[in-house]
Image 1 (tube, rainbow, N blue to C red):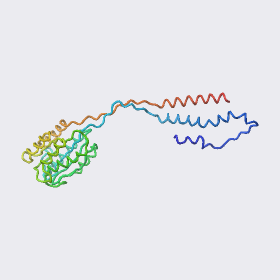
Image 2: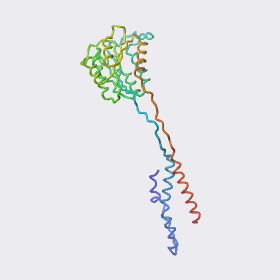
Image 3: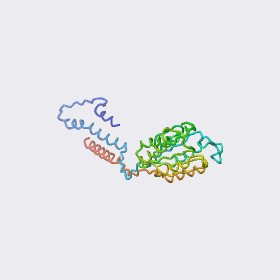
Image 4: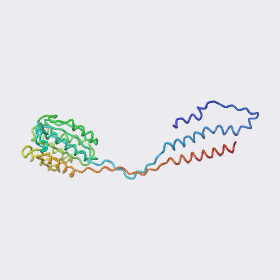
Length: 289
């Protein structure tokens, strides 16, 4: 609206001509008429500014995201297609149960920067670390058994998760690795991956799913111990859900808090100034007439 100010000079309908016998009679009034567009422009600016309702914010507390970088490394090998893991829905595959529990786990995270790695015969990052957890849940829906091959490359899964964490800036970095088998593939050994994790200061929590003997419990326990994490086992869907509840307690997500601000409305000042000038102008015109 302020772009219309030049119209006080450039947009009059026409020029009104006055004829007087003596120009000395109109010198003072002519000078005042020349100043009127400037006065109108000032008055217009004050009222437009008041209408825009300017606000002054005084920030009391600014809370930036302070969570951790966390990567979920999930096994997609062929054995994850086995059913019977969920006692209530025995036809459901282990992988489907895992995805549902991971989705609920994400619902409880707030300020964490979370990524997703899938591993089978090879490993690949399904999602970089991100705060956009609803989008991450959509990525989960697109995952399936065998998407990374039928074997189990645990070392490569860890190494790929470490590469994803390398791009983050959080002080606390965590990998949650879930598998139901033995390491039998991959170009990176578990020893190399664990050594890399220790150099980066990354904590690894391992979760074995299935009956005892179906996964390498000793290996998972060693990986967790050497990196400062813990190892868990889950023989059923209920136990797996409880494992993720423990993980949520071990790696709590900071509570999201909104910044508190003082808000001061400033429209009253240009409004008052405009009203004072308008009243003064009306009074002046009344005396002049």
